[in-house]
Structures are given as structure tokens and as C-alpha cells.
Length: 187
Image (cartoon, rainbow, N blue to C red; front, top):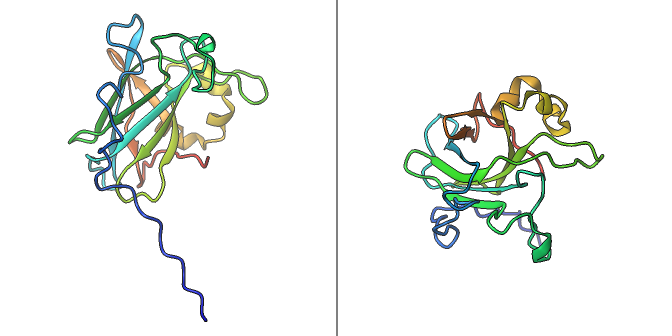
């Protein structure tokens, strides 16, 4: 009896949005929250074309660097109105947006503070698994300079994870492949 070869894993999609998104998924904080910012971007493929049927998930610390884990007791949670998690399907132009608060610094494994960042997972058709990256903030120059994870990224590619300030928050496009491919992390 001969062994059969492995077959490829099932890819994500094509009906990714069904049952994975919900109405207030993009609202990590409620509208009207003081200090809230919009974190926006687009998902683009290797040709620079938008990916209209993707999904972006974010996890982050609150403004004080506190993490809101599902396993925490309610009294341990950072705030009642801050969820720490968001999920947004991409629109026709590959666009997504999360209303959130800018995170604070979180201690790294060595106890040293990390630069403020947002963890991001990207789901899209054609991917065998989700892609994971971080969004850092371009105006956190001093903190970014010493962040151990960001420092592990070759300097010429760091811009792919730096969100630029806008009038009401920050913007970063995530490119799935190609010359300007976003840096993704193995987790």
C-alpha cells in the first residue's frame, strides 16, 4: 500500500464575512469616547489592487498599557468601554477602519517597555492561514527606536508597519505581497 501525498490546506474564503463580522466589530471603543482615534488602512494584493473581501482583526492594550483578556476577572479589566479587540471586513476598495484609543506601552518579555503597537491579523481569500503583523505609530520615534520587535525588522522595511498620523487618527495600508510587502510575523 502506498501513502498518498498531502493535499493543500483549505484557503480562507470566498465567503469570509458570513458569521465572522458583527455590527460594532470596528468599534474597539464606543463612538464619542474621549481621546478616540480612527486606525484606518487598506488591504492590497501583490499588484496593488484592493482586496475587497478580507477581514482585519486587532488586539491592543489600552491607553495605559493594560491588556483586557477574556480570562481576567471583570474588576481586572482596563475599562468597561474599552474592548481591546476589533474586527472589520474590508470594503470595495480594500478599506477597513477601527475606532479605538492609541495604546500605551506594554512591558516586553524582559520587562522593558515596548513601543505602543496594535496586533493585527489579516484574513483574505487565497491565504492558507491568517497573516499576523503589528501596527506601530510613526510619531513614537523614541519608543520605536528601542522596541525589540521593531528593531528585529530590517530598517528598510520598518515603514511597512508604521502608521502615519492623519487628522483624526492614523493610516497604514497592508500589502500582502510584492515589493512593498508588509512585514508579517510567525506566531
